[in-house]
Image 1 (cartoon, rainbow, N blue to C red):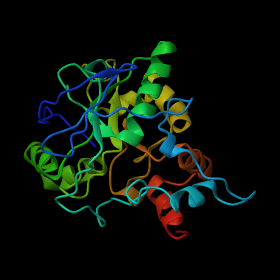
Image 2 (cartoon, one colour):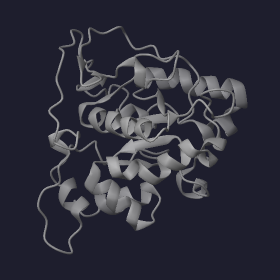
Image 3 (cartoon, rainbow, N blue to C red):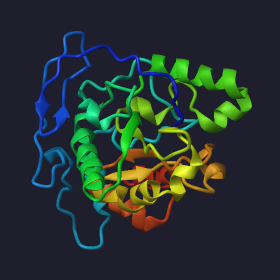
Length: 258
């Protein structure tokens, strides 16, 4: 989702582990945590269970996964106002857009995100996080900003009402490039740049899906957002990519098998 208001996350005690500052921020007294990662760099908890040949790997994974990982969040199905993941971890600011420090995601997504941004960087593609976890209160401010700027009708095409934003899940981020628009802006032009093309081509390899595709507004209710990625875990992201479905349709299909 579009985001222009600086994050208001509280300052946290942090530590650096493999280039990622990680601090739990789901309680009043955050405890520093270390992500247990697999050889691929993704947290071990995202590994898919064994499934029978021909069966949906994602469906099998979904039956054992955190219930919020594949939860449908859209204009009709939202989250409680008090929902805040207990395992949020803060990224090293070198992975954030300048001026937008303190970005955080759930523990299951931080490792894969750093792995993806590092892979892009190694290939000469500079991508950074502009917005990640947003609480219900943060989304109140974000949505009102867009209402004031664009009017409510257009704002509802570009930003989610509080409680209906995937950002509140803690597994979603807006990933952007300095070449977009006038420097780190969330504009559709990003999709046609090398950075946007790289993200579209490789996000699923790291467990991420693009939630709001081109020509998908009739299904999602939102305009094209080539920068908005949601972590599903590698088994589900690969299956989503091969399905050809809009993400919400894919998640609905998986939910029906649980």
